[in-house]
Length: 552
Image (tube, rainbow, N blue to C red; front, side, top):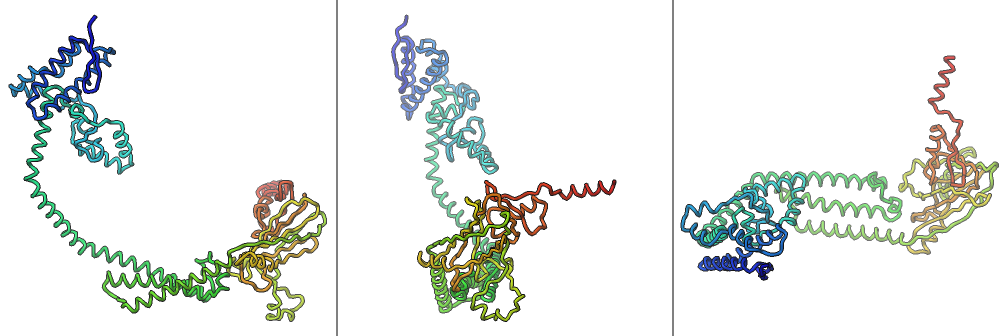
């Protein structure tokens, strides 16, 4: 049974036998005595104590024990080297060179190098571990980042996982230097000599460096000026030509658009514009102001490019001021009319009306498009309609009108639903917009829709009409046609753009009647469904049957 004591080596507590403690104490006393004359003996002895503490911890963990014995201390001293052996090695240069070994691959450990780093010291740490130049490792990471970005992810992971070399022992282990007395002494001396060399060379290199920096920047800007005066001048002219071509193309486009809008009131690339609204709100003023708003900046860019790059063309201050005033006025006019139009569409309102439909025989209804053209009393008087023959009919083709190009265009949408009673009914819901709710309601009520019934034939018009030639205020009509259960509807394909929720074309295709003018639907509990004739024989099958008959 041996007596143990508790010691503290740089913050780490160890249990050690009394005899082993005496040996360790004498060893550290000799170490401190030997390094007492060094420039920084405290730092060296502290690093040595840290290394001894690490070795003790590794030893205890390896052998799974809790107390340091005499044999453990002797083993650590043997690995670190005794002071006597170290002093003899210092007196013998050849012995010293043989005793101290660099680039020991077995003793190397991977750390991040805090002394040679650009970001986190990962590349320098890897280079020290494999004994190579850090430049190649950095180049490999740069290539990996450029190729797929994997280098950045790997670098971040290593930055987190690999520890930083904090102590001298860590830096020595990173470089493969033996962590004994001679290694600590030589590492410290090399570090001190390097620091002194840096201070010594700084006084000699400071002034030449300033001159080199001055010469470098002077040469850089000199060659940059030559480049801009040669190749750069050509590049700038090419950019100027590109700008001029773009401006010229845009100028031609807006001129063609302006002429088309003034002459015809519409322009194909601008189909999204509500021309019917603009036509009633001083459209010419809007088109002229919009043209000036777009044309004047383009013209200014052309003139400035010609003057700045090609040294041709000029514009005096008075002309420039005139263009600016015209441009600002055009912006004001355009903003005024756009605001005026937007205000007239501020509120919306709707009104509904229910119309009874006369029941048809066998609940079969024919839905057709009303192609008769509707004339107001003013139109009838102007065209002298009364003088036409009674057998003459004026028809209207809805496919000839574009949505926003027709003055009297109003949107109509037909929904067909199942009726809760045996009586078919139709509900018309008129919608419109206005400056306020009262005006929107007035616009909705002053809208006319033409619907006629002739026995089982229901004729629907494809548009709305204003009663008093009112301006367009986004009038819409939603027609809800409620048909009793099991009623049959034969719908004309000209209503394809009016009927919502069903496809007339798909129904004709399902019945192999793509060239037919109508499609038959039936009202079910699940709504209106296409009536498919199961007797219909596909065209391919009919050909096979005909061929078989001929063969017989």
